[in-house]
Image (tube, rainbow, N blue to C red; front, side):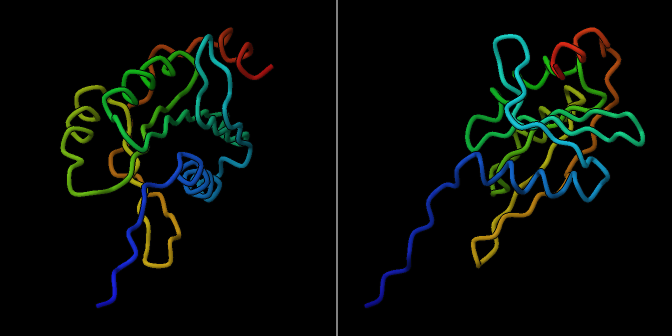
Length: 140
């Protein structure tokens, strides 16, 4: 009897690569991974120079609640904030948190050939807390 190969959870890096591709296609050509913001690091900060918009994304393989907690801080530097998680059958909590907080939700899915794709599930509300001084600090 042949055993099916068990697929393990991907690294956060695979999620970030899929997200990077999604945002590059949307005009966010300049991107910074692991951008330092205070004592934390933003997984990916995407910059659209044409529209002068910033998007900050927190990617998590596990613990969507923690991701939303971290991402809520990014409202001070980004126009749009997202949490990216793996798409699976139990994303209900992440969907609830996205609606409650106004933070966007990105699902990353894996196909049969182990390629990863990101798609925006819920669009974020535009941040009302953006501080231009903090943006300069992060981009330096």
